[in-house]
Amino acid sequence: MLSFILTLMKKLWGGRFTEKTEKVVESFTSSLAFDVRLWKYDIEGSVAHVKMLGKQKIIPQKDAVLILRGLEEIREDIQAGKFRFHDSLEDVHMNIEHALIRKTGPAGGKLHTARSRNDQVALDLRLYLRDEISEVLKLVKKFQKTIVSAAEKHVDTVMPGFTHFQKAQPVLLAHHLLAYFDMLERDRERFGDCLKRVNVLPLGSAALAGTTLPVDRRYVARLLKFPKMSENSMDAVSDRDFAVEFISASAMLMTHLSRFSEEMIIWNNDEFGFVGLPDAFTTGSSIMPQKKNPDVLELTRGKAGRVYGHLMSLLTVMKGLPLAYNRDMQEDKEPVFDTVDTVKACLDVLAEMMPKVRFNRNAMKKSAEGGFLTATDLAEYLVKRGMPFREAHRVTGEVVRYCIDNKKILGDLSAEEFSRFSDLIRGDVAHYLTVKASVEGKTSPGGTSGKTVLARIRQIKGQKAKGKRQEIKGKRREARGEG
Ligand code: ARG
Image (cartoon, rainbow, N blue to C red; front, side, top):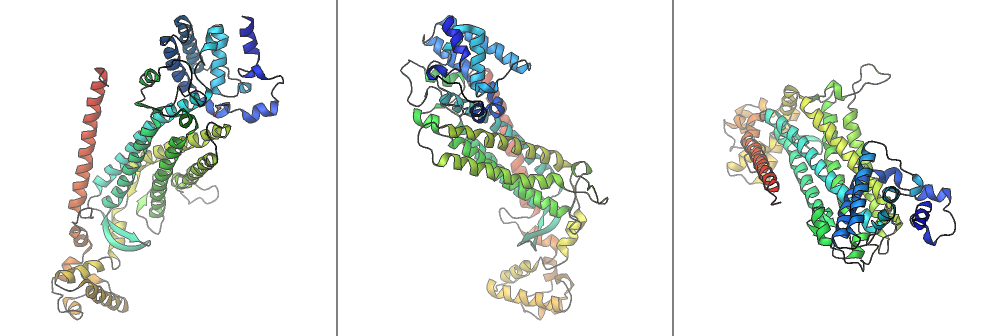
């Protein structure tokens, strides 16, 4: 009993120390302020660990039972907001272990057998990320759904497609929107792929070398639903590439969200007037009464910057570290946590906003019709009549020059005017040069014709239905205990 009290009076690692830790050092080294968010995973990991210790008779079964009960109480206390965390106890792991020892006496002192905070923190972070990645995946899906819905409503809305931010060729709004669907689809793939490498059990690696105690790692992996366990104890405690990968996938996602936001900002600008943003998703100016600002979109665009920053900071933290664990790695958490928060917040607000965005068909149509967006169609018309493309390109260029000089657009030219440029141009040419015909003609796979776009929407919805069916099947299998 006396030695148990001594354990509690000092820091849990205080045995070899003769001096007390300086206050400034305590606050400098403490990670509690941020790693407290791992508490649930810390307990989950400890529960699995202690079950294994008991099963393997590394600790007496009765102590394992006491510890399990203690952990359960701590879980309830934290949930109820009754748990007191102490900054002087360094981090969430020490806080929970300390409370357990206070509750259960010497039995609690056996929880950390065959474990180190090094494999413990790696485990907690993996459990946390595993959960958060599935949240992010759900949110990406939710946003994608809003995109598909908007696309479905606009399979006949034409707009100018741009290159170099200059009007280039007419496209369907649905096609433009679905480009983002595909980007987000790849984002989901990236997160899903990253999940495979997150989903590896590091526990049982102990400090760095493994342990002399007869642990059953496979059992722990099964309890915590890890399909794999780490193969090398030194790698397991010192690797954070799974976290880097998560931030990297997030950075890519933020690039997509940022580009989407940028386009919405431009389209919402008076000069474009392609979209009207919902009032509830814009803010006013404190000085200019007429303003309605797209702040949600601007912030999303801006927040891409901080996620890129987190990626760079974690890479930099890791790049010079000798094996195995180094305290530098405590700096992994804030970038990861803030990335999770940022990505989820952006996806959430965009998914809420998207169904309320008003797309202005007329403004888009007018903008697509104004210039020479179907010039390429004229060139392709000539190609179909046997002219080499380079020549067709030159002839079309001459037609455009003529229009500019005479303040006309392609649609204004008479059959006679066209025929001056090439005798391959027939009277029917004007028919091919309307915005509608231009779009409808783009039936190449992946092109913007209504037919291709509708087929793509059908394909997406079919995949979704198939995914849903598989999800239900999986759940049934799990319920039958075949998971
Ligand atoms: N708070 C620490 C971290 O986040 C936990 C691991 C500490 N390990 C140690 N050997 N000091 O990395």
